[in-house]
Length: 311
Image (cartoon, rainbow, N blue to C red; front, top):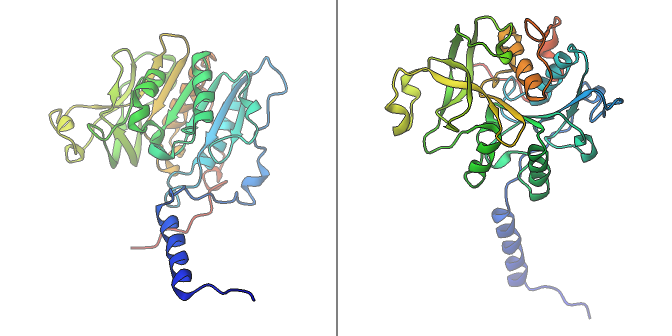
């Protein structure tokens, strides 16, 4: 005769399943690419080893519409990089390539994705892949939230890019920033004064002493949320920098570009594109990289997110 589970045992089993589900790690949501996004070639490797291959790791869907548009931002960046002769950008969705062979002979890797525990290369095999690239002298670019890294990885990533955001001293928030003064450096070539309205910023990072300061601006002192930051009231804060790694290779980081609309600001487009080229060891064109923006480009390849509700 077939035995049936007792009500008590069934209840216990159900409780165990619910408990296991509760304790399981919460993984970031993975959204399907939109029909428009699927029209863009992904992981299209360079047809010519003489071209400077640059890998663009676009993070998974994140935040609200108009923020953290990693795929759309990387698609735009790929288009701007193509304007410089000899450059081959490779767009990767969901933070990591399905075919890791595309990393072979890359001159730089760009990480435009969520940071902290969601940084897309924290799994051991992925971490070792990025580490090997860095040690081989491959350029590394970290944009916006990507500079926020897990504490256990902070010291090593700082040795890669020159600065990392940590909650002990770091601050963040949204406000207008203006940039009017520029040092002489290839990354700043052709970058004219610009404003980034109400973008999201991270500042007061742990920096290596030998970074190359590139872009600083005023921040509201009320955003200084840590004791370390409060002692520097009124100080302009660094939000973009370059780094020549002692073992070879270059890195560039910019903590802005939270709001997708600010890619419409020519100064920001040129700053980031120049920074990627410089990190890849590509000579930045005189007057800065060409960064044309076609009409309607800012509304293409956006993630499928609910539209913001009116307040």
